[in-house]
Length: 290
Ligand code: GRG
Image (tube, rainbow, N blue to C red):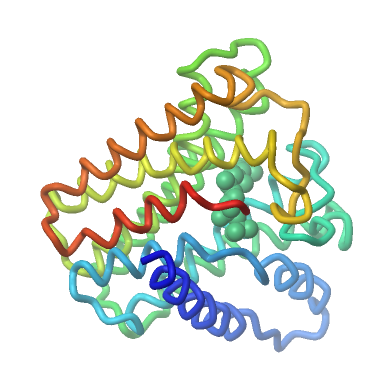
């Protein structure tokens, strides 16, 4: 089954890459440098959020082509967040996806502009998608906008930067992981479900699954941060910063990841056998090494 997911991942990655390439064609020579910076950070990556949108859409019988622009939009938001996260006044990371971080190559000023431009390109991709009806587009734009604002990435990052050191507790770290990591997975999944005309109950199930899966995913990320190989992980590891593993220890962190994974899988019950594929996806995510 891992082989099946691997090959699915490979195919989706290729198709998402094409979608992103087409979305970032520049016709204005004056801003060539801005596009170069944006393109630099949208290449590479495992495309897990795009895969998730497509897996969820498939559960609701949506064809892959209809989901691709939305899947690419989610990856653009993800790329924008990685650029911002690596900035010196944020996480201060020099390495991302096995190469120097965006600001190391293009400068902090350009990196920030590219990140913002990618966020608007993500929204534009959905709004200009002829495959989607207007009401579906509106719902997706709402979900995507929520994922990186006060209900998502920005909120998580704020707490991470400003409150974590003073107030380290399980709840605070869980809040950060929920907003910084699970929120975008949740948007990716909900967008796929919305395109599939899923009921509110089904969308809530996907949301709950994404939350627990995202929390488990982040713990695995923290484990890789502590004991991963920089060459395989492709980003700065063993940062001396607080994360879930440093708070509770490796063994407890592994147990907690298992607990979240079980809760994620339980959330899928109401979706029936079609959602089985997400169980495979969950176990694929927690076994990852990069
Ligand atoms: C307003 C966009 C925006 C952001 C402001 C900087 C910030 C707030 C939030 C940072 C969020 C962030 C980067 C969280 C880390 C999530 C995470 C575990 C990333 C790694 O995901 P992978 O392994 O990466 O899927 P690849 O490179 O494979 O795509």
